[in-house]
Image (tube, rainbow, N blue to C red; front, side):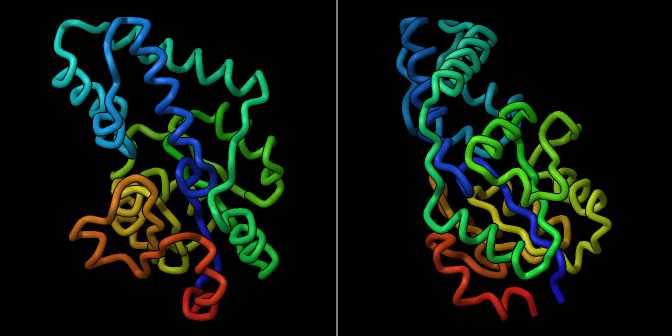
Length: 219
């Protein structure tokens, strides 16, 4: 019986990936290069070190990656501080509320920085729903390593076999599955690979589909 639900954040609860892409585009233009959408999709859900390798392969020596990343973060910060809109993904808030009102323990496991995680949750009125939050600041290995999910479960004092995970990325869903948790994927920009198709409990088009499966998900 499931007693804990752990959510990813970017791309699952909030449509933040489009924001990050535009910010990377702006930072790249300032260095005189174009940041293609295909490269951005490749870098989603993996560690910054892995993303840097793909960027280096694409751009070669004609770009300063450290400057690109730092400038991108500055642009994101300005967007947020200027009150930029952070849209919910379809059904996201209702899904969090659904499990919370059912009396389950709710956690969040994100590869984002804690200051951005806290900002998003507070701005969108979700902070009070989460009893435990783990961000990239607290782990040594990012998704697809299961560390972020295992730490979140430990904070909630939850058995991994009683945890339900919702993820939008291949790397994130892989992390949830490898943590031994019942994992559902709601693809955003990346479709599930063969491993996810074989091991995920459910694959949804959006979180709006979740309430209809509530009893099966928690059984």
